[in-house]
Image (tube, each protein chain N blue to C red):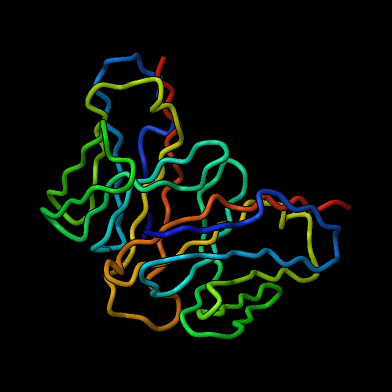
Length: 111
Length: 118
């Protein structure tokens, strides 16, 4: 099975940098996703990591360490619109069509 | 543009009634998924399908069923609605595994259906 842990809530200031961590324990691993979900809306894709290291996409970066079962999402130059829930999801190895989601981290950006 | 839609967006029903939530995608994706999302929980998988006539149970499948008669649609049926099934339901779709480059077959989500069972 899969066990995914993320902090429940985080608060940061506009213009700052915030790191959202995700740890996972899994019987099979085939990649890790980060999704963003604004209140009352559907999740949308942010990033995907399958190899160790850092993937950078503009203000957002995602890091993966498979040996440690650890990932983080780094948000730079925070904007008010970044206030949202961030979901970590692990794709299965033997059943690679589906993913298991963590409970999400609610980020509040304050002026 | 391709999209994934859900209907209705809001539904109020009574305990014991049968309810069907529709999901329709024009991405031509093989994979389709149904999740429920409750406060304090992430997305929990109810059922999923990897193609026409294929359906599989997820982690919270009791009281729910799905059928896949074509590529575009995966309706979710609550056989006898219970108050514990009050939730927001999301449908999602993705391409089949095999294309592991780039975005990793990420899931595209519908707008959600808010279901209240009284």
